[in-house]
Image (cartoon, rainbow, N blue to C red; front, top):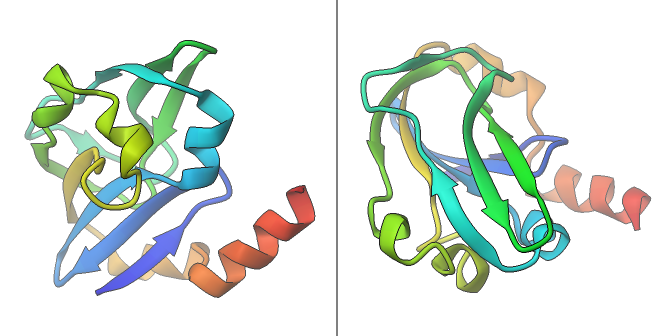
Length: 124
């Protein structure tokens, strides 16, 4: 499965016409301990770069943007009880939303892992 990244530190792992969305380890480090995740309702249509959901931490609240346009088909309900999973496993168990992708062509605006690592190097 291919994984792509945004400049806002979201990731999307593509599996056919759907994608799992989350935030990167870098984003988690910036936020600190996650205390709450506000999910979109399943069925909601989201446009690329539109606010998809929100995460609250001990440091701040942060909007999470949709890396691609699509329809929300699932949320990680486990995070409702244990939002700290995002801290432990941001790019695996701590996924946030599954999206049915509307336009795979939007992928060209995202970074692959190597490009994202280069981008991070410029920030640090």
